[in-house]
Length: 452
Image (cartoon, rainbow, N blue to C red):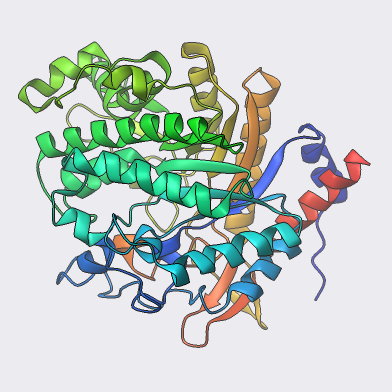
């Protein structure tokens, strides 16, 4: 069956992006790799968290996931078939350094060797994330990110991965979404390691940001030629109504979700209003910490899925907003991405900026062996157009990556929520590109044709 897309509409969208724009797809180690107890891999906090009764919606875990470790070549061919120029993956820290310090695991390192070489052989830029949440459990047993010693362990881990992979990777991201690690993992307790303390969460934030800055300094001192940056999950915040209460709530929410992370990185200080709001829960900050956190970035990565609505009395209900929702219950509002990027550009001096994750969970419809995910295809097209709108208004946008290449383990939601542009049958591990994958390939083909 052929996949016909309007050439004119694809061309119109493709024309809005410059020749050096980076197009990619993204995944993370714990969500796709599997091989959880093989070849010397250590336990991660997510391996442990999945064993807690009730922690994962469907009672599943990441032991097999997409079996990516054993299906690497097939998955690399899938990436290449899309025509993307970059692939964002993460390293499982306990796979390469089982205890988070000390001895390295040669078999784990060899896997990422094959991954990086396989991407380069296919003409795809490897972009590596060092921490996509799966901290070695051995470090958690010593306090994890709440323990300042973990900062030093992370810097050594970053240096070790650089020494192993050399300058074969095009970009290195230190952390993926510090807010999620801190707040969902240490304040709300719904993600690993499952703790519930705001004070701990704020200390975790500080140590994540500090380890990021110190890792950048150490990597540059070693002559690292890869672009270095961090990835934040950011949304534009809107007051649910035009009341003074909701407007004030919007400022507070924006401070906790966005400024608490962007201000230290790009301005060298935490926002004063949020520091005051936290009271006794503020982190311990030592001399020199803030300067290290503000180490210049080569790039900023932004993961964005929806807007954020601020409601002082918590009365806002997405189900009554009138907007379509994804399977995660998130509003589909592409304008929110444009608004976010324009706001950041207005308030900060941005480095080259990438959308490092964007996509949607939808119920896929299988027809005669084909997956018609029209909602996902439309979602991706509309958000690429939102990036184009920001780019045309001066935002230094450098790339866009779809989340995700494959259906995978969606953290606390288990396997019920599918974000992939490639369908995975978890019983057989068969991969089937969806309509959205065919659309993305057709769009990139049109974009490349414009560059010749």
